[in-house]
Amino acid sequence: MTAPSSGRPAAFFDLDRTLIGVNSAFQYARYERRRGRLSLLQYLRASVWMGLYHLSLVDMERAFAEAVRQYRGAHVDELRQITADFFHEHVIPSFQPGAETVLAHHREQGRPLVLLTASSPYMSELAAETWDLDDWLCNQFPTDEDGCLHGTFERPMCYGAGKVHRARRWAKKHGIDLDESYFYTDSFSDLPMLEKVNNPRVVNPDPRLKRTAERRGWQVEDWSGSQAST
Ligand SMILES: [Mg+2]
Image (cartoon, rainbow, N blue to C red; front, side, top):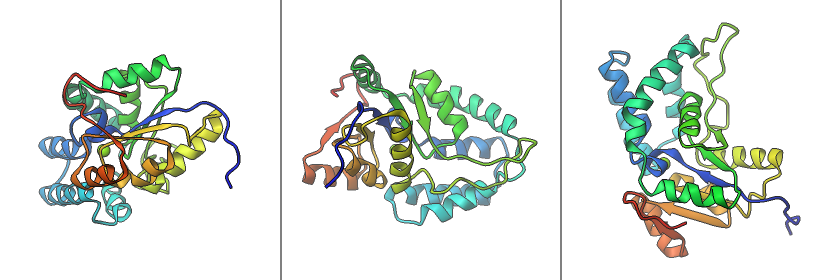
């Protein structure tokens, strides 16, 4: 038997293909490729991984480790600047029209709005500022004392069950009732977090998540137009 829960619920949101209509990691790899920062080989490998990522077929943590290793020695200020340029050019225009209605609804209900994403902290902070979210949970990349990345990430990765780990820790710290919370996502890989909350919400789902949602009677939403329910 679980202990009685306390606190108020929060609303958690995935970023890629949920709040925004694209996979920003894939777009970012293309952007980096155009700027000549990724070799063609690196780009092709990143593209293949991201295709597989969408299908949840590979060991994401291993693939992610290799991707992050490419940034060893990069300075955090430089990454922030590149991400900011990318964000304004590619991410802001892909905000899903239906997301605003849902964000506003939860805001009116007094629920904290929290981004829960596999993205970088640089991207997540910009997203939270832009769409007026209260906090963000994402992957973290440790740096040395000069602000250069080690090329590693904090484990568990903020992906799959790793999202539940981070949400649970955050909820405890902020007096949030995680069981009564909401989580919005498009991806089957987010099943652990969808199962954790009592208010799972499936947004423009991938085929596997669509089938799962239909079987379980979960609410499926389309945010690609301006009409959205909560
Ligand atoms: Mg997603």
